[in-house]
Image (cartoon, rainbow, N blue to C red; front, side, top):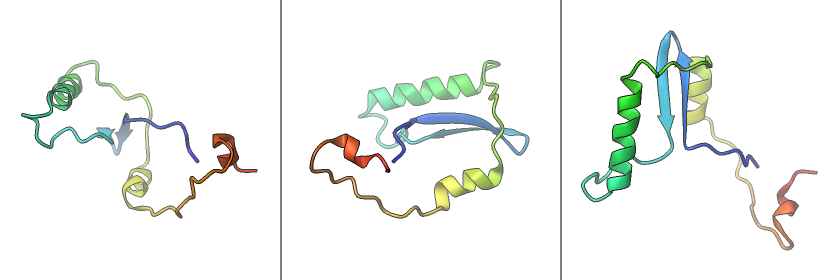
Length: 87
């Protein structure tokens, strides 16, 4: 189980720049002011000179993120979360 989760990442892909967010930043912006503000901040960052992703990612890897189906895992534990560590 991957415990290093990220809400957002940026990368160089095929000579361009990419930002991916796992957060829903566009649904009902008038009712979700925090999401609306985060989207505005991300867009401002992406349009600035500070947006310079350092890491290059292959386009096939990006496609895998959105299309590859991983086998289901069971997060059930009787004792404690340490039971989930593969042995």
